[in-house]
Length: 126
Image (cartoon, rainbow, N blue to C red; front, side, top):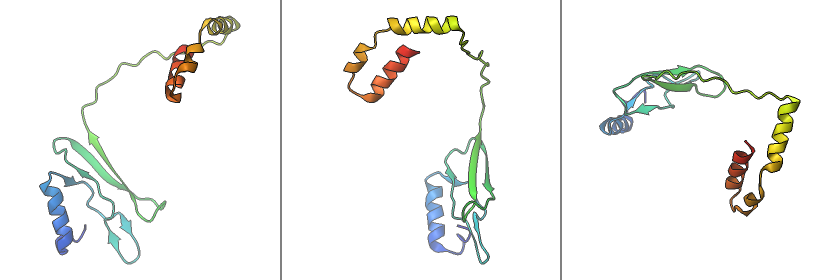
């Protein structure tokens, strides 16, 4: 990728990417060793209207570096919600046990698919 100007096949590959509306966001070497530096990790985007930040994370976890691309967009601020808590008092535990005793779980055994059984059980249990 770094020698696309002098390597015909690499240049053709990049031209094809560009013709399909994509841009490269990583342009520096992502693998460096004693004898060479190569760009082997690619990130492409076709979103040219958003501002993005791309970069390379230098690490020795692998034989090449990590890459990232973060699109900066308009974020809507969500209002914070009050955290739900459970009070495990003896009284509340007793109420919960009564509710469990009164809940009919028998129809769950008729459901064919395990995921559906689990979802129905959790809905009743909650």
